[in-house]
Image (cartoon, rainbow, N blue to C red; front, side):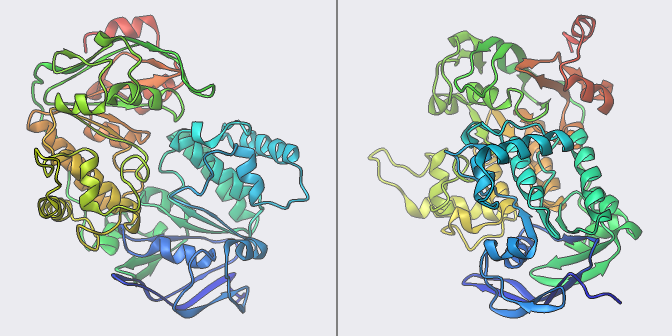
Length: 508
């Protein structure tokens, strides 16, 4: 038998509050796509960071092509031929796409050569990106494309992908899988982390399952079902969602002729956006990242107050020029797509992060009731099964999925009249995703109006009562979920909806 490209032998990594990896062993062969599967907090990302040199193990050893190696930093990993696409991006906001990519490449290349290589790779793989754009102007989906292209430009022997498709459209995922299968056929090895079980079954021929930092199973996912993989990962199948038909009430959010010029030269102009979300319904917005989602969400949340006052109405009141706090007073709560930095302050504990959108524990005198804050945070942690070191655990200490559960839980716990959620289950395991979607539907059944912006079509079809598509800053007519098809929504993502369709669905 040939020597494995990568071998991990009894890798252990301890942190003060948790053992992230406990005697983990796995082998990755040359030209093999190997999945690492586990629920949020199972230790997958820590293990990948050890392989990439970003984290040092406490025990165990790493063998690369049969010889022991000590990978002290990502530069040494890249020198061996290991590249990684992180779930949480490692990009400098103030630099351009090309400058960010250039930092990790051979400095014998000029910046112009790197920019040309990015454009060529982007065109080859269908990952549209402008190398001259500053990173802070990119949406989450566009940042994901930058990370993928940066990794591919290193021509890796082992490519580690941590939730690479979480913010890509189905069409972009298909194109990416063509590329990944080509890489594997050419001898490149993949370590692939995803909570999308159908992706793992399509792409990977080997799978290591982690639970609580321990290897609990090894299998060929192509010989398994989604149900059997779920049982291996979380010990059970996720509960089926209950979607009860009901007649929605009055409009809680009404948007009328919302047109805004982009504030960034790389943004998108909003043109004549019109929609409403009624009490007791979930309205979904689909679309390819970078088509105006960010601008629309800013205008709805109150971060952009340039709209006419009557262009955005919340609970019957003109809100287009109100800030976020004033809109929260009307019952609007908002979950942004960026967890760290906008959804939560990384260095603050979970309890103090409640104060970003909750003022329950602040008395009239302005003093903070810390005990009340901690009690609130503990209740959210318990209700939404958040794995954290308690109410005072720093936001950045949580896995991505657990932080997402806490942020969504924080806003749901506020009993909003209107909840706007962007990418509600990005990077969340199947059990937690079912829990978040179930909580959204329960909120809807309790009479809340819910607007969900997501690039996961399966998710939108699962929880929405009506769907819109956003493309090039324009919003399609609404479409009842029962009438929608994936192919039709895919066509609309290119802006292809006709006047006849608008007439047919205007009243939906």
